[in-house]
Image (tube, rainbow, N blue to C red; front, top):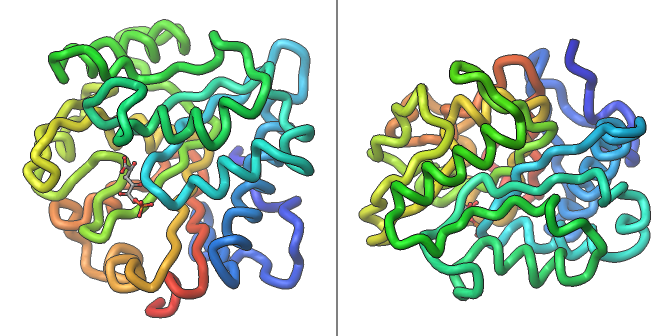
Length: 266
Ligand code: 6PG
């Protein structure tokens, strides 16, 4: 049974809209309110997953700009004190093929917005070792990190408590970009596609890993995303062109956390 992550989520004014049994949508007035709803969700799920002694809360973080406000909120009161950080394990859903102190690094973004401001055991931060020169080695290394942490058998998939995702203007999510082989990877945990659009390799969790999570939450803000968002949610199915359509948890909840500007075409 999948617990409804939203059943204790604050603001009765805009209750989540149930799209179908395991997909829900919340539309917040603006980016700041969206970040606050996402912080509430993070706290709710963290307390639920890591409530008991020895339990843990496993999260795959998103890169890009939209989640920065969320990470900033989680690093400060009232949220910072509500999260059992000693039981939180942070992973990255995707990473750029750059060293951890590079301006493009998703790890660096999270370090600056969150990690540098909280107390969390260093061993709970499982970053992508994207400084390795060969992107395929980076992917293998991160897959090994996940296999070790989740103690996976060869055919098993890791089950994250929460995977945070963004949505690119071209319909990509994590680093699952249109027209890349990574979209069709149904056996690997982590892929290292060369992405023409950014003229670089990216490191990304594959769709089966993301879809095995208990909760997958898209954070999407801004009018510039409204067109692609309505195509992804309401348009014809075409995941090669709109990879975000690959995301459908097999035994979990899919949440669309949106601001009004992004949701205006829905
Ligand atoms: C990345 C992300 C990527 C991001 C989208 C949306 O590494 O860039 O993981 O998938 O979520 O590109 O980015 P914005 O939030 O900046 O619009």
